Image (cartoon, rainbow, N blue to C red; front, side, top):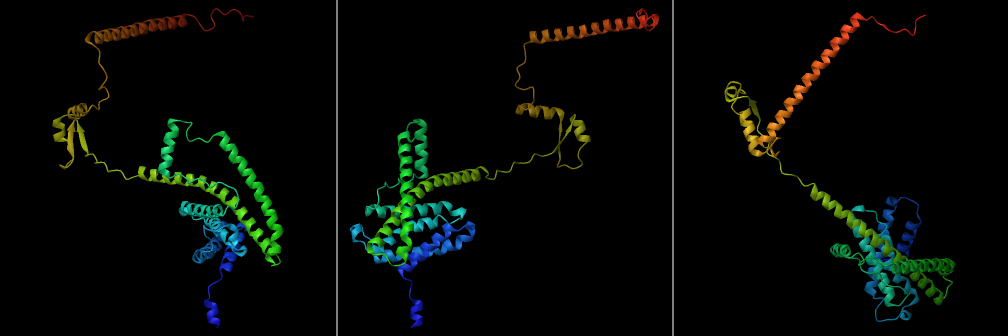
Length: 344
């Protein structure tokens, strides 16, 4: 009897309560995120088991109204939202994009479920663009800047919706805090239990809308990071090895190349003329490509150069003559000659 009780699977309500409690502990904890990963993993397992059990029991259907759902079963509508919140608590950076995509899918499933039962008034978020669609929209926006840019009216409406959502969320949280102890003690009637879980659903609708908006922004950053990594990896591809140059001895002429060799035939020799001709054919000489003047211009340049040299020589002779005259004057005139101002 005891063995049969031990093998009995946990009840659906216990799975939901345990997973929900682990989420509350993780959100309220001040420990590092790495120390909470075991609780995150355990909470995800419990909530996933509960979600599979709900799907097997077919508790919810698109053909029924909200009033047809039992008050005790309303809390199971929260399973996708709780799964999305716990999925975001994972910190594996290498799988971050996968985690945020999975969390977004959970939040969207929850919002669609609430929309089908007409719980709350809200608009479903748009599906994010794929990388290919994003590139095409960017090219279109470059061609016409007015396309693809949100208008000021839309931004103002979005901001006002956030403010209203925040106020409603705070009001709902205050009402939940006042009802929590009363409902958990078992003293609440069916109407109060139903209101309690409907308030929880409304709170998580606001949370899901905010989380999806944050996820969409993070996905853009993560995809950009992956694109940068791929481009850097392709740019650092191994280059083809260059063929090394063969060493050679540079000699003045062929005769010297024969006499002053390296002592072994594997090292080639090359004369200056051969080296010049080889570089001239390749266009590697520094004066190649510079246009030369006509013969008349060359003659004018040589004449100008001769005149400059002659002028320098004449200047040198004049300077030399002045220096010799100054030396002769100093020989015949002692130091201080002609200075009468300091005489007593």
